[in-house]
Length: 424
Image 1 (cartoon, helix red, strand yellow):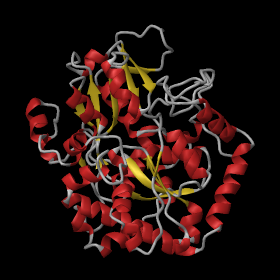
Image 2 (tube, one colour; image 1 turned 30 degrees about the vertical axis):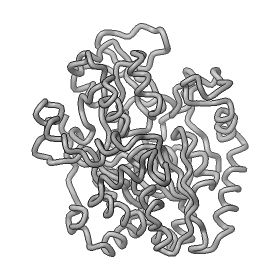
Image 3 (spheres, helix red, strand yellow; image 1 turned 180 degrees about the horizontal axis):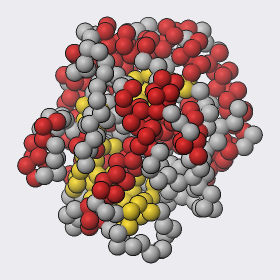
């Protein structure tokens, strides 16, 4: 088995980093999101080094039997990671009889996947479209066992942008090619008569074109403030941070386009799901309990995740996290027209753990018509119904949901089915 990051053959870039392979940084301060050390590690995944990483991951997994394996969380500092961090911060893994190491914060999606494949972390949150790339594009056996949240992302633009039409001829950042952000952005641009393109720096952009670039979430607010981009679509709290700083405004919320969609999901190696079902169940139990607690303790969650919290899990202050997790101003967005689907009665971010098959099927169909840099040939042959059965294992989350009171606790239909609602 080989594990390969799909390279964009036109410019030799990795699908989660805004840099070219020819641009290798000497420091982490250049703003590109990829250091020389990162470059060397990621390069190992495109060659024979991949086999070594896989063997290392297998050895780490086999070193522990059953519940003895510690929970090793890998995450990015976004609200999508909330259940993982709450479960750790409130000792919910320990309550399930598990050992848990301190969560490891990563800067990019490429880095977190690398660590996951190598077995350095074994419980991660990952962009739902990226799970397709990992399992089918790179052929690494892993399973989605639950959702981390619903909604929780937005399209933030410069103050002078009044509508999507104003983005014509300008540049907008996304966090990863394989992301719900890329899918939804291209859908709304297409609906507005605009075409998504990927132009090199300095190249001309037509008045009906929007140039897409991949940028690490942590770089987006400063890039918008510096006017190198006209907007970005990303997970929270980076949209709230731009609002608070006065450098940007939300033009649309992702959940106002695809109702109660997933962005990040909990991803486990298939070897752990198959060989350690008790461990997998206990991990999932803790994450479901974390989501239930978060629903009733939103301000406390903001404090727990903040840079002033005991675990200092994220670099964000409590104000920006509370604006997302405990939002009281959603009706204001409805009044100004930012939120168009008022009858959906949503929150800026919400939490429910069940991975609906209808979502996975719609996701596959959506990404098959989305422009993605790099070799995405594997997407063409994916059958949506097969992927919904093969990628997702919902046995554990169903048991966990039942153990905390059943589907109604999270507003899930009793039959665990729903119809996807999409309205641009």
